[in-house]
Length: 371
Image (cartoon, rainbow, N blue to C red; front, side):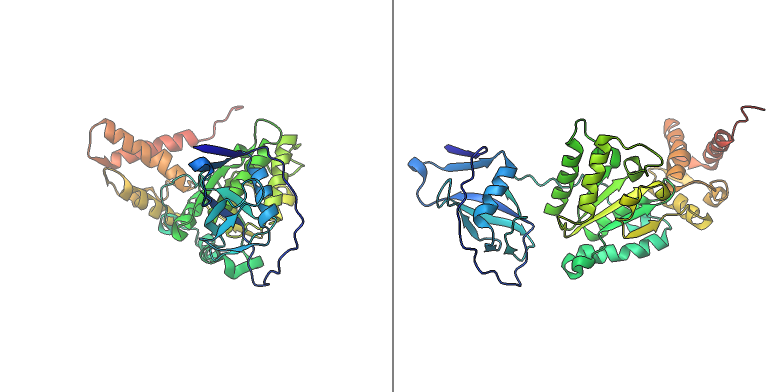
């Protein structure tokens, strides 16, 4: 088998009269190609094409195929390195087909590995207790993910979730992905900072490229304030500034990430740098649960437990006041479950819950260090 690696080849520029392009043709965001070959194989062997330098291959592909109108199943033919070598269009976006532009991304199928988001446990809207205003505002996001082309430049693309920790910001993002059956790219802001100069911007670019290749999709950036605090609260390091600038480019839509919704979360929106905050056209508040919502949280988690809960949960509504959903689960219910399992019991009792709540109240009592 013969191999040709498109790696460090010099591009040969040719002057061609651009074809007339119909005004209604849609610009293609990406095209995935399958190397097919040509009628006469080299020395009777199959010629295999691979790519290591993706930036060079994209420049090469755009140079010879810009302004071509293609759809899935069409063929594109090389005219320079391997004349008449055929590449089959196996996938593209928009799916209806369109025109190749100077911004179209190309991938070879034998190099292309869809980097889908990590598999998270599916979350439904019912599992996000309370937050009715947030859910209501997110309905337009659902509509957009179901039909991005309908919105065009009026898309709800950048959303900021804010509120106390543990109030369901990440859960609602997962519920949106579950409801619309789209990939969710969940990352903490600090993970975007690389070890070396340039790493951060590359991670941002890769994140949005992967999301764009699997549209419609959601990018969820947690703890945004870790990299986007206002200058009055921190002096911005060079590597962090690089990440912020790359993120601003994506949020501004310079690359036209059609079908990609960016949701960021923060506990302190007032501390965000205004350059970042101003890019989010919608800010959605998440509130601490009230009495009725805390009871629903208790009941919801009790139903999911691997053993029964034989206790009156209403008794703990007042005692869990000031707790968010995560604290109720992790600090209150989970220790009671572990205690019952260690004692080989088939249920959690009222006594178990009473003991745990007493410990929580005791540990949360402020200590007077100076009196």
